[in-house]
Structures are given as C-alpha cells and as structure tokens.
Image (cartoon, rainbow, N blue to C red; front, side):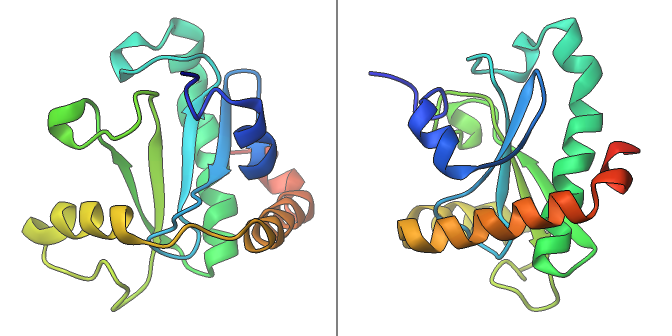
Length: 155
C-alpha cells in the first residue's frame, strides 16, 4: 500500500508550498485553523533518517511554511509538533511536523500536561474537509504565498 504522503494525488490536492526537499500541505482534518504539515518529499519515517541536505534546509523551509500558515490563521503564535514513532503518537509512517497556529482559548487551550492528549483526541475525531473546502483553503494559502513572496524568500 502506498504511503498517503507519497501519493501524488494527495500532494496535488493539499500542497501549498514546496522546495526540492520538502512540501507543506494543509491537514485534511485540521485541529485549528491553519493546521498544516511539513514533510520531506523522500519517504522516511524518522527524523534521524534525514540526510545532510534535508537537515540543512529543514529550518528555512519550516520557517516559510509557518509564516504562510500564521498569515492564513491570523495569528503570530504557534506550536510546532513532531510525533516520532508509534509510542510518541505518530499515526502515519512518513516523517511529518505539525504547524498549529494558536489563539487564546482555542480548542487546544488546555494546561501543558493535557495538551498531547487533547491534540491526539481532536486529531482523530475532527471531520475530514470536503474537497471544495480544501480547494478554497489551498487557494488562500497560495495567494498568501504569492503576496508575501519577497518576505518568504528571506526566511
């Protein structure tokens, strides 16, 4: 069975930013507005499997994806989350990082010890976006990317 994140169909529908090593996609079951994922194009399961080129470009790419997600969500605050391995809650065996734009009193507004339990529960119970909803969001993210291209390129 093909990895959902390696599927060209998935990437075509959900992608809003990419470079030679990484792609940023909108989560089809967003826990909060702007919930995006950063993932390597190459299929790897674990952060420790990143090659030197991926490690060198990861922070720069992630900064750009975070910038776009925060503009879309209308906030400056965010969580950047990695669940690496089954015992850490990784549900898809392709390395991916969650960008979670945060606002006061959002659905994840719990104390720190409850955060991961709340995130895991909401991630698995949120409704999947309809194709039309996802298309509108991707259009908005692409528009933000174009509008702020010069600023994004400096990150």
